[in-house]
Image (cartoon, rainbow, N blue to C red):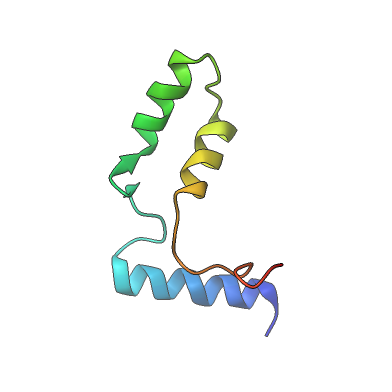
Length: 67
């Protein structure tokens, strides 16, 4: 099974268990709130919002065993 198959399996599992592959918020913090904060410090870009949001994700990861 390749990485694409793993990603499809993970996405399908998340949708069946949680109703969506990506939740609206992590730890009660939404992308909208992140965007407002980054706007205030003049650092708002779509990529920056997505990066900060991803850092809040505490679910298991393929990279959890990295040194």
